[in-house]
Picture 1 (tube, rainbow, N blue to C red):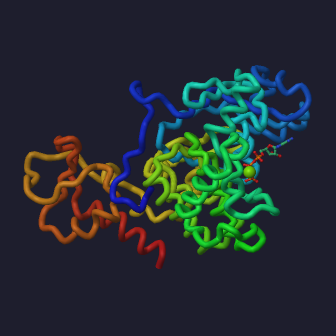
Picture 2: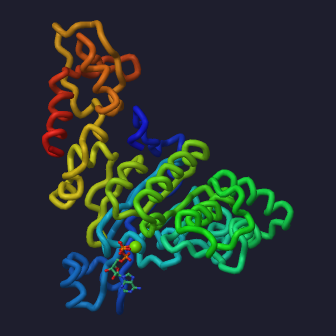
Length: 358
Ligand SMILES: Nc1ncnc2c1ncn2[C@@H]1O[C@H](COP(=O)(O)OP(=O)(O)OP(=O)(O)O)[C@@H](O)[C@H]1O
Ligand SMILES: [Mg+2]
């Protein structure tokens, strides 16, 4: 999240296993879809595969892991396979091959009852079209998931009322969806997803239908909720600004494949190819890059005075203090000097940006 001064994305490791692990996942639509994988046809570009076989590989050999508490964004142009990917995670679409593991549960091999338990109790989804129940008041829309779980009316209404407050809908409990604006309806969608306290939240372009100002409000809402609730999230978008703002890491997809996975700074600093470079070309680099990308190696003659900052401080956050100081910035991680940032290094980024905008 780029509005905070430092970024330290949660990472899966031995002590903290991944909340979500996707391994070599495929979804091929079309006749004899399972015969494609492992055959030479699998390597054909999308339009040729369609011509030769009548099949579309919407998701093509995708692997990634998401750590507990991480916001993992999947970004790509229309048709790149984002919705198919996110729907395969709970088998709303049946994957053709590969595995999905959610908090240790093998989703692809799961029985009907395990799958039902997973969808009811552990994973929630927010869609672009809110999918609210039109004949139910806000409070009962929010409580819907709890009702399906068999939670009694008094308890689910109490819980729903808390969540309604949490997402800023207090006072609207007894409205019906069509009495609310689009932004408010999506708050209901968000509240409904949160009400069951799921371990994993999946968002498929939830804010695409909202106008830009409301959209920004909703993004800020997600950031605020995330600070409080520390949920694991997979967030689909085709909007780079949204991806950079929300994502701890971003997976960029094209034609069903992964083009790059990285932090916002990694993606902006070293785009994997022209497709990504094109996406990130208009991004103000100082808003995304961290000192790690502008520091140089320390030299014996460097001053040992001056500011100390960590390598994941965002350049924009560091710029004012760094430029006002008479000394270089000493970049220190875990008590160890890892680099030096000169004024020039900061100016190169900030000034280049001003000239792009001018
Ligand atoms: N049920 C289906 N049958 C055949 N092809 C499909 C089906 N669903 C999706 N596809 C194809 O798979 C590809 C990926 O579609 P998908 O909806 O996952 O893309 P997306 O990235 O979510 O796009 P958008 O940004 O427009 O929502 C597209 O080429 C699409 O036509
Ligand atoms: Mg989609």
